[in-house]
Length: 343
Image 1: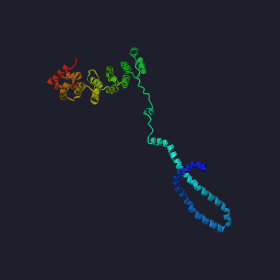
Image 2 (image 1 turned 60 degrees about the horizontal axis):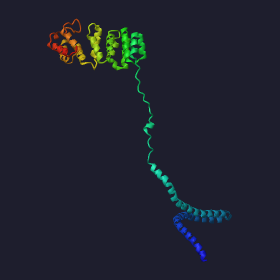
Image 3 (image 1 turned 90 degrees about the horizontal axis):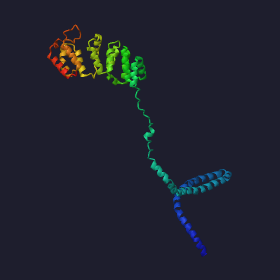
Image 4 (image 1 turned 180 degrees about the horizontal axis):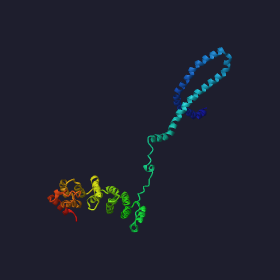
């Protein structure tokens, strides 16, 4: 007997330790069991009243329904422990579930506030290949000289090939002016200025427009002179003051100087134009200090004409500059301008 007790003692200790472990869990489940028992207690009086009414009214039906009522009661009895066990299982497995989901939760919490990294602008922006503008094709010197030697048809063909080459277009304008095709010559100059505004500095333009202004292409020529700025005003002044130019062309040039004198016209051209457009001798005499200060070749030519009694607007007005004859101020202006003017 003592040996049997000795063998059972370890088992009893195991059972005791197991009971000690389960006791706290049972204590935690007890409130849940009490809460689940309350609905059963509330339902028992209703069931009793229903049973008494049923027995009184229909004993046979009670006998028939009794097995079903018994089965329901057994099901309720079994459901109470299972509901007790279900929270217990949740309580036992909760720590394990918490441990298994800790790492993903940490990752989720850590990554939730962060936004996805923006895609680099170099990836989103399409890379466009920037092609540098190609320079317009230009004729070489040998090709240009050959066309000039062959005449106007060859120049026209070369200009069609190199439509944006200002040198070719100016050479074509010169050939057209020689053929007295001034309308075409002015049009070629316009094309040259469109291709390269710097072509306005080419001296060939002045000679071509000078001749074109005295032809049937006068209006086109004066319109083109406005595009030349200071050089255009120089051409207009020379047209207005050069002997041999038709009176109508000279008056047209004066009108252009009066209305459209270039903003960048030289001080000499401005002073000479003021003397040219002055209405009378007194006005011209008042302009002598300005002429002395700003004058150049064109102003000097005007003053020398005044000193000789010329420079009147018409041949009938021979005494238009009488107030300047023998004027010391006029002589001083001429002397000073002559000293500072290059020969």
